[in-house]
Length: 133
Image 1 (cartoon, rainbow, N blue to C red):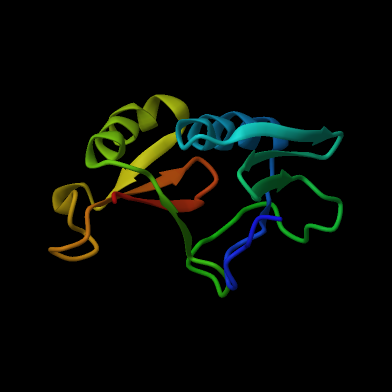
Image 2: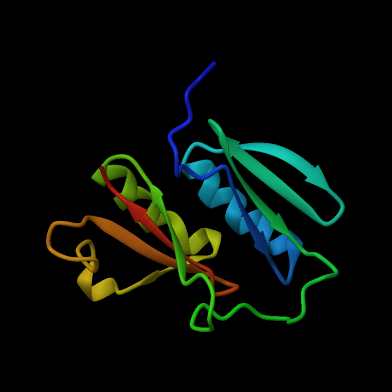
């Protein structure tokens, strides 16, 4: 039996206003990070990497039509993205897949001088941070 580190994430569920767009944008990004398609149902889908999976869902329980990362709640999600070269590659290709760069003038050290990362924002205003090793 594989030991799972205490505190590691099992899954992340993201409620989205438009499932088809989320499937495209999140699917592209997660694919770049090594996630594989996992499950699909009429209102959502998921991708899996190791013991972690990410869900996007357009649920009837959603109370709004837009996500605002500046409202109370989660501001952004950070992913380990491998090498600096991989962060650079995903950053360069992101806009064509619906992920737009934030803090461009501070790249790659927007998080500080010893932190190499890209900050991307998708069409629905979800922010991700791609952190290099």
